[in-house]
Image 1 (tube, helix red, strand yellow):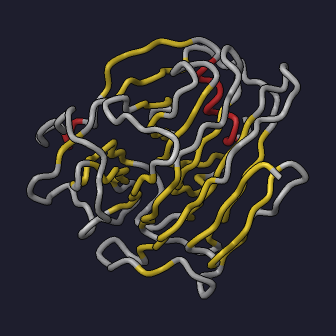
Image 2 (cartoon, one colour; image 1 turned 90 degrees about the horizontal axis):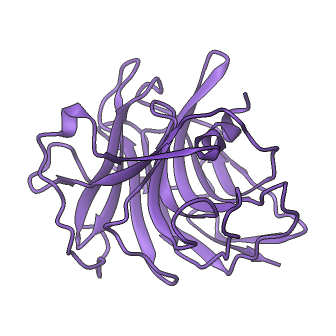
Length: 275
């Protein structure tokens, strides 16, 4: 199965369950549900071992069938050619008007991925709007191939115009280190999920706005201008961040007839929208 289609297997039928970080993060306190969005940029990197770190609550959509719709993807952004240990950046939220009751979705996200034989393992974090869940609102989410499930973090009420600081990283190496997804919220880092994945301590990194229109409902999803900026990469599990700039070997995605993409500062700042 095409690994980029695996996620949609989760929506052929839905089972909603309460979810949280896996066992090795269970000792972290729960994140407060009433914190407002951040008003400042992150003051430093997150860590599972940092004082004050907290874990978020998720609603997890578990796959219970493998009926997968035909492909209909547009990927707007870039992928590193080499491997890195993390990515930090800020992603703008927008109203993309997906069609309720469809397989439509738009996801603006970062991803760490690596090939594992004939398969691909990955963890992604960002915001999404889906046609099958969430009543067409924008939601913070993660997806990983350890669970093959979407996790939505509805304690964070996001809206068009918000800009979310997100950090995807590992703090260790080895064959299956823990990879973490974090959200900067209430001027503190909130752990969304941490998963042992067969990525080693380095993985290819993506930054994309991903658009999928349900092939059974012909049409085009209109997206407003969405900007991703302040993007930085972590060269090693214990290394500081550096800008994802033009010195980093990168495969940029191309614009399409429907969607435009402008690199204001390759590859730290860019914008995509419906042309």
